[in-house]
Image (cartoon, rainbow, N blue to C red):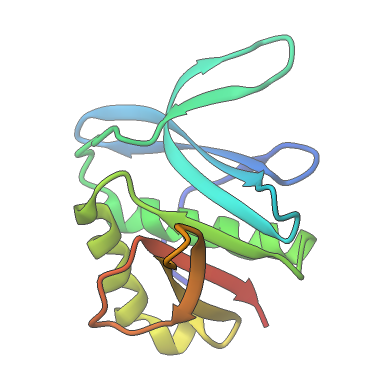
Length: 156
């Protein structure tokens, strides 16, 4: 997808990406983190404002509940989407799970995925993420009408 996006910097293993959101609330440092789950073929994607950084290790802590209201949501989401391309180019066989810290964010993701579904599915398989009766998060076919807890994507 060719949308305006922020310049990303990545750590050596492409699991942490940083960028600066610029808008009417100033410059805000943001990070996208891909963390391997107990299932080594699944990574969780977290995204938010950087609230601290360990200078010795470079490890960043993010606030994934922050609402910046910087007026650049489309550019921020395009930047996050671009990180999916970079991350899955490095790790092509994995599933990436992402959701929101609240239902409004999950709904926003559903609207964006639905709007650009044709373009997204040229590169990725997209699934909804729901809990099964045992409480495990599993993937289901994507539907723009279903309320889910999040989404899985996997590079084709």
